[in-house]
Image (tube, rainbow, N blue to C red; front, side):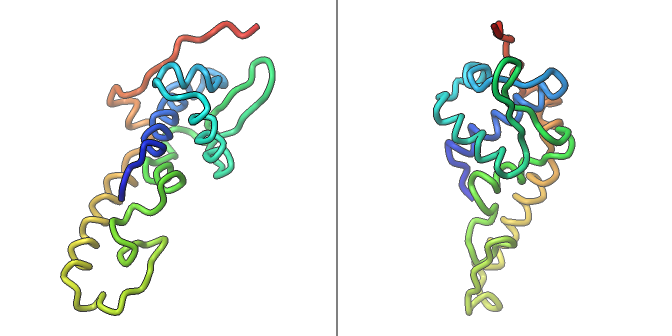
Amino acid sequence: MRLSRKGEYGLRAMIVLAANYDKGPLLVQEIAEAERIPKKFLEQILLELRKAGLLESKRGVGGGYTLIRRPEEVTLAQVFRIIDGPLAPLSCVSRLAHVRCPHEETCGLWSVMTDVRNAIADVMEGVSLADVCKRGGAMVPERVSRL
């Protein structure tokens, strides 16, 4: 598991959207400014999350991005996997992208990395966007005038 800059930005954007869940769509510019994320890069990330079914977008006046599901229903693991792939540190211990290794039964490293994968998955699958918002990590952007 490696959290890329893209993954970090994706998680931060999703947390902003979760904090604003019942307040209407947010413009890419609002999220980008609140989290200091380059707008063009954020547009690519949000498009990927929309294609994965976590967000919806609306064009025009009153448009922007919104979460499709409640923040309590979206885990950090779900967002991470969409952007950065499997949580496992090695492909031979991955649940979703497993690559068979002939030494799995006798490999001490495989055993340890399985424990690492399980610990990471337990934390990331057990924490929702709503949980992160409750911890105080959510920026609520100032709403810009939508002419």
